[in-house]
Length: 303
Ligand code: AMP
Image (cartoon, rainbow, N blue to C red; front, side, top):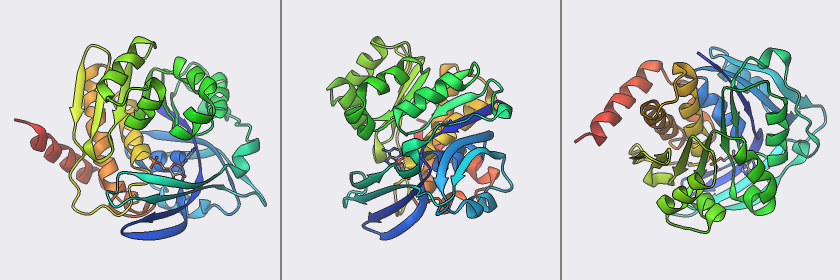
């Protein structure tokens, strides 16, 4: 099993969906990612929060799972990253109402020496300058997997391009693929991204419609795991990435067949996220439940 080192946002979210509303709920890309990936592998978090972040609650939730907080900094008197979003009735599209970097504005990530053991590096969604700074500080990662967001592509394109150049696998959604290439057709956008990069693989998330994976020669498409009731899609992308990366770290293989299985595990974990607000549905899933859902999913899509 490999270790995962993740850097990304640690946040307090205000979210409104047609099913309800939460304020100051635990969120952030690195948080959702860690809840999901720790079902599969060791996770080391690098991030920062103010003392308004419920770290004790998070540690209690994850106490039975292999999550190392040595690189997680709390700034006394500081304010945690804030994000607020409102979902449309289709639960797929959302408007961002607020993004406040707060303690991330001056964050200088320090990688604890015990984190530097040839990890799989996951650059979760956060300022690309921070992603680049972590890339430079981590000792020969065996695989670099990167996520980003419209907010950073629109505002910091050159830095985003620099991170993408140093990545092995990129996970984005279809609107981000369009921003990068101008093509709204995701297979066309994927062709262009693969042609113009050295990526080993590209994953394009299509929200409730599923996910597409390609290495340039081979292709895989999986629908989303059908969920009866969606309460809050926030974090689905980050938990998908957590299941995907966690599975790769567990099996330490990166061939296309393994990537396909990782896509299925990512989709299984994401199906939990959307069934409750914040990280609430990610606290107590058994390994058996994950395996049962994986097998059920296999039946759903085989013919
Ligand atoms: P997702 O629904 O997978 O896109 O993830 C939503 C999470 O990402 C929320 O918990 C937010 O706190 C966090 N987030 C939103 N915008 C940003 C941003 N610009 N940079 C980093 N994290 C963000």
